[in-house]
Length: 175
Image (cartoon, rainbow, N blue to C red; front, side, top):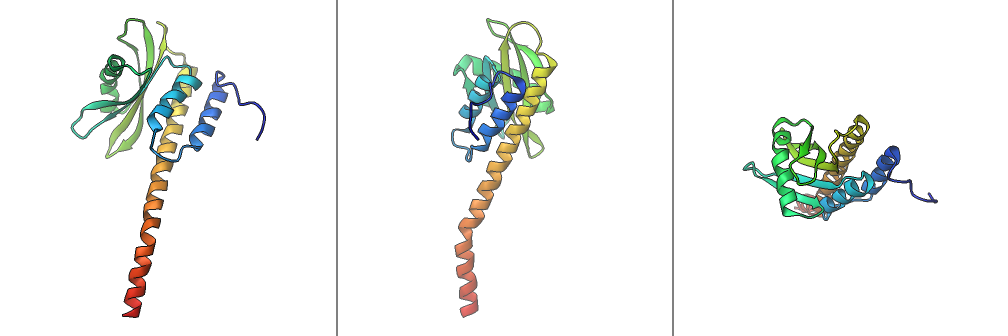
């Protein structure tokens, strides 16, 4: 494929470009900063954050773009209801400048939401339905990427064990 990349500011092209970009990610290393940059650059979010909840229920920020501890804390506070309900939420973030945001649950682990994506856009008007739909598509792409990486890790783990299994089978047959 040659030619210029699609303009990421158009909705369909943002999704296509995201899918192409995520297809190249093969490990968890550096995943969250890459995803935050995608949300910031391809979807035009002024703030992009990914949050996780540990076994004790504590919410921690995996990545915030731009990097800012206070901003990450505001996102974590807003994400509590999404972790509890498993449903997306739209709200204004409590920041000096008004920001309308969407908070999306991503992935499930042991019947709980694994991650929350926070994408905030500067302004007072609620995000249009088309923007919400784009973020829903993005959440699906991210979940697919996480599942693909997990599957690759399981396969590689099994492949690492094949020589040992073969050795054990040969030992048993030779005994």
